[in-house]
Image: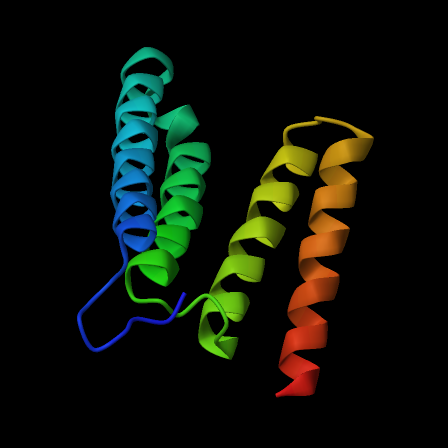
Length: 111
């Protein structure tokens, strides 16, 4: 999604607005989660906010194809998977952690 000299296209503007809406929805969910479950929900809420913020940043700044974005995103995926494994969510959580960690190692090794 490269911007022309005239600024972002209509599609890019819509994607950026949707990214901001997604951040708002996740933030509202995190607040709700914290209010109902207390501090026990803090790790999950913070990781969710981190991942969606990284995606929104990459979208808004048009940096989703940079190494910095991919490293930040893969760290979030690995953390999310690790938390889910710790909470006992089963095989899919372990897979999420392994894939996130593998992508992170690959990205760091390639750069």
